Image 1 (cartoon, one colour):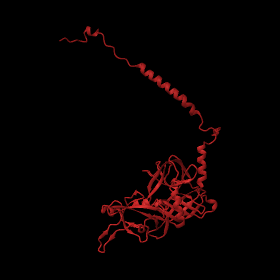
Image 2 (cartoon, rainbow, N blue to C red):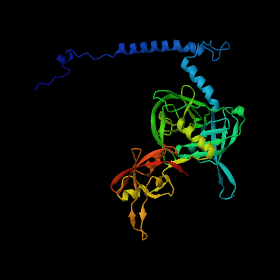
Image 3 (cartoon, one colour):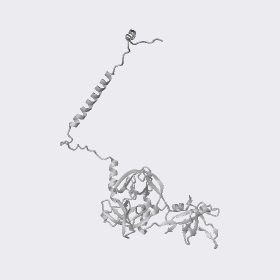
Image 4 (cartoon, rainbow, N blue to C red):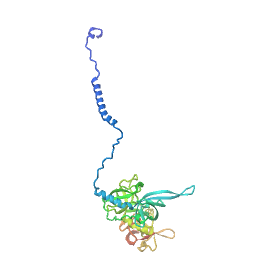
Length: 391
């Protein structure tokens, strides 16, 4: 094996590898580029830093004339200006007794909207707006306030009537329309007091007809109007208007997981309002149509394997007795002798339970004649019944 001695002449004279040199070109170029960027930025910032913060010669910008309002804008404004004086803000209060001092005091019980129904000072709103209160204050569009008296309520329709003693000049009854000829797609306008913000207008379209919602009493309200006009807490009881500014419904509920408007609002149709409110003004309550029977709870019918509404008793002298309907009969020792007639349909519409019977009767009036289909034993039978008034 051969070893090289670096002291030998051959090693000293051997060519050496070239050592790498520092990249002077690259870092000089980077510095030049940074300097250029700094110069550009400074040329922009420096003049701004030199300008004074305040300018004594500042004046308002010239105003550009907008021209005429669009036709639909003008129509919406006219509807609001015409109808808003009829809309009121309702605040309820409940009376409680202090557990220690026994003194009476008032607490808020909810707020909502309403509208002036006639020149006698009657105010229409939702039942659920006033249900928790014992005293109510009605604030008109001119901000005048009145203590309201309770006239009557129809919980099954979520409607109530209050009355205020205001001057005739302050009362502007709302213009009443009809809901029988409404069409999906019509423009609608809602006025109310959402979240306590009075005289608020929202717009939308009529989204659907014939909806059903459930009132506080548990009964179904039929033929309800659905709209996408924004309805929020506080809008309840306010009017829903058509493009002619007429009342077509009373805003009553929303479908929303958050409690705020989600584009699905419901209104009680004005034809229902115009049928119920006069009764509340006349009698303080709604006269409901009925057959004159008492029926068993649905659980009893199910226990007996029956699908329908089992009649428990028939009121003597009632419409049901005149029509030949029979109730359940028992022997003296408590044994079932006759299970009673089982109502299965009204005017051909199937009835499956006691609430279904109540809901089916709600669309009729006292004095209407309907066909009752019932099972007597195994045989289906029919009879005509002229509906009577129920207390």
